[in-house]
Image (cartoon, rainbow, N blue to C red; front, side):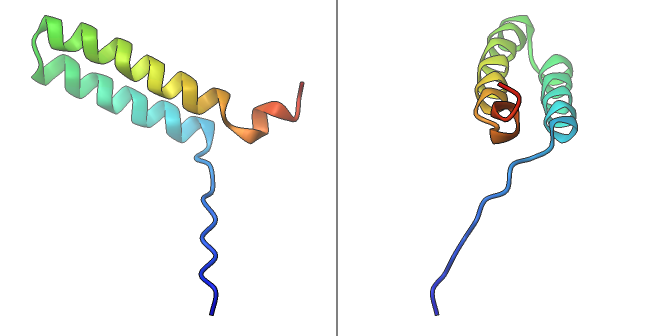
Length: 60
């Protein structure tokens, strides 16, 4: 049998909740430098994931 694995995209609301949870962990468990650098990294990762979401391309 062929193994067809299709990856489904996460909904926008779930991506936002995951982002906020990770940022809050960085805020409470890290120091200031870790929080600032981690925040910029997380913004880049989640912005890239949001821009690659196929649902966003339907409206353009």
